[in-house]
Length: 42
Image 1: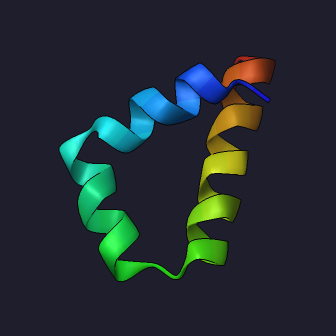
Image 2: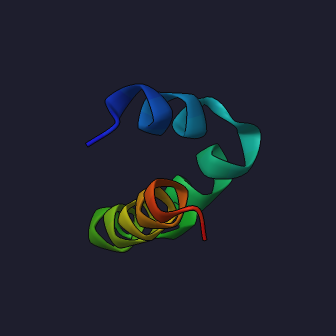
């Protein structure tokens, strides 16, 4: 897993808001989908 990518995303203002609204598990699923898209170039 690309932890540097995740840390960079979590520092963005929109992810600070998302993390306040979503439950931790929902946020995790959202991040996994983003990483998969990035990995496969989707």
